[in-house]
Amino acid sequence: MRARSGMASIAMVVALSAGATAQAEPGRYGGGFIEFLMTGEGTGRARPIGVDGYGAPAEPRAAIAPQPSARFAALPIQQAPEPSAVARAIDSRFSRQVVAYDGPGRPGGIVIDTNAKFLYLIQPAGQAIRYGIGVGRPGFVWTGTKTITAKREWPDWTPPAEMLRRRPDLPRHMAGGPGNPLGARAMYLGTSLFRIHGTNEPHTIGQNVSSGCIRMMNEDVIDLYERTSVGTRVEVI
Image (cartoon, rainbow, N blue to C red; front, side, top):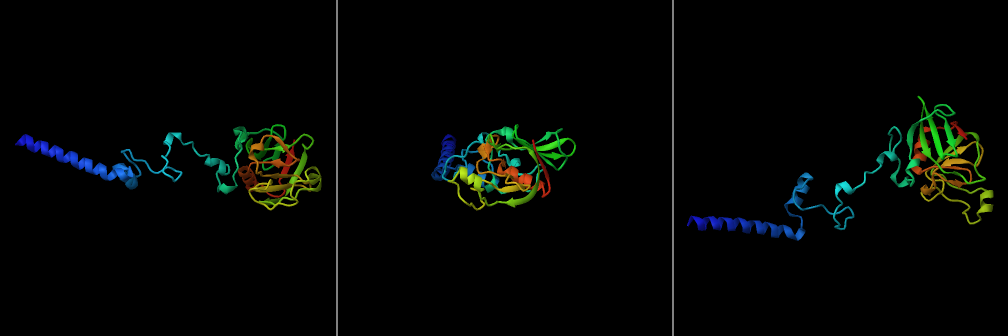
């Protein structure tokens, strides 16, 4: 009798377990999903719906690359720029970074090395913030000293007459916005047609591509724009 009673107890436990599994199976989450909802963790086979929102399994944590959120802020960190305005370069050599600096200029000034494709915003104590840039094509590279005479956010673009003669297909005027070739910000240099500005073609950073303007990634030109003022000295070497 005791043996039969023990067998019956075991059978009842197995049946209850099977029933619980059957109830959980339609959603394929099991008890682990409830634990996930309550605690954010789970020990069962359950996983939350994938990030695409269509039920695809979420990637393991180790497979998710860290997001370069520091690139969206100033150095040192300030308020992040608009994510929709950010356009990243492909070559990591041209990422914004603080470097040792012993070149020309004074703290607060800008030095642009057209050969190396770098713009330096000089800092105290022998340092500079270095940004990758695109510069003029052969025949359009220039050197000299200017000052920032105006600053614009999401500037409009009106191609000058000489550019229209070379490229009659260009629009006569383009309103500011993410598709505008001047990008998120523009700093006008002296009385010339040259600007330091953003771009809608981040893959061109590090190249000779412009008609003489200094081209930057949008997140970088936003950062530089916030750090400089009208009257800042710009030396192009």
